[in-house]
Image (tube, rainbow, N blue to C red; front, side, top):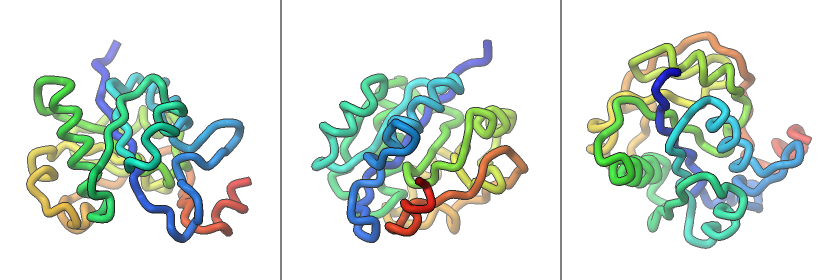
Length: 180
């Protein structure tokens, strides 16, 4: 069996446009964060780290008992800061810097196990089209050195590949309605 790849789920956003925590949105009988953890486990990802905000920590823990939950103390600094919190947790858990890490924002939920399988064929920063997520990241040290509010898209080169999945982004009540 292939060696497992660690994964990080980014679930620390304020969800101000949606009006409720995205990670706890129910879709097809499970929360978005629980779905992401399940799909990553099915994809042989391990360990799985979920980065959330302090006020969601307990609810996310209850939704994802088979993952490591870490709190970003400053989620308002942006996704790269949350990613760095997750990477530091992974490095601590593994005792080394991983060569590759799968990363998925909790609100980008149009990917499948097949999407992950296709991504894991690569050894460079890679994003699936059309879903756009999850991302396979390989420049871990570079990502750790970025400012917390840096745009990852503008900071690293990302290979784009065709893979199963669909583009979905849950940001507004209208997006949530379309999901149902």
